[in-house]
Image 1 (tube, rainbow, N blue to C red):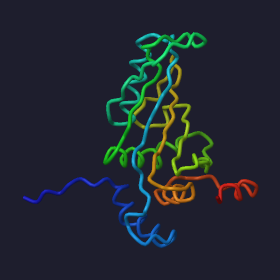
Image 2 (tube, helix red, strand yellow; image 1 turned 45 degrees about the horizontal axis):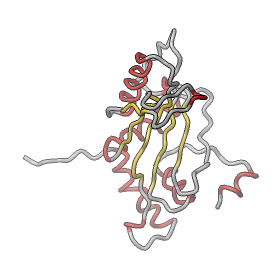
Image 3 (cartoon, one colour; image 1 turned 180 degrees about the horizontal axis):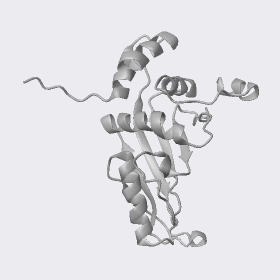
Image 4 (cartoon, one colour; image 1 turned 120 degrees about the horizontal axis):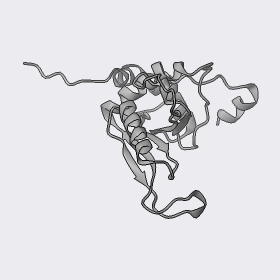
Amino acid sequence: MQNTAYVPTLKKAYLDTVVPELLKSLGYKNVHQVPKVEKVVINSGLNASRDKNWVAEVQKEITSIAGQQAVVTKARKSVSNFKLREGMPNGVAVTLRGSKMYDFLLRFINIALPNIRDFRGVSQKFDGSGNYSIGISDSTIFPEISHDTSGRESIGMDITIVTSASSDKEGRELLKLLGMPFRKPSSQTAAATAN
């Protein structure tokens, strides 16, 4: 019996379409120079004074969105202004790599983002090293989350896409070819983002 390993749809698209396109458009000599997505980090900050049930609720929701167990992060030091003591839970995070990363990105780009009300595309702003972060204020854009949110506040999160790109231009081109719906820049910002 033949063993066929599962290859995520987005990874197949990356290998079949994105790599040849980037080789051509950015003039790489070698396929190993082509940037790739290395990991996706999903992080949701918590108000330290909230009860344990809320922490468990956020952890459960981030786990179902990511398809991988999320961990509760704890404060490393006390900050009195935020009523935060060392060891208190202050966030929930999960890092995705490999197949789970590609599956999450496919759902995020094609299903979750278009669910945002009045969606007109995402910002083209990168971090200067080819990595991209986006803040989501309402987790119900993901199909895994029930829309029945009566009586509870929505859970927000930051999603960071870490790439092997050495510049913002390369990272932007990579994510654009993977289907990331970037907003068309206005004439003033077009010159700034071209760098």
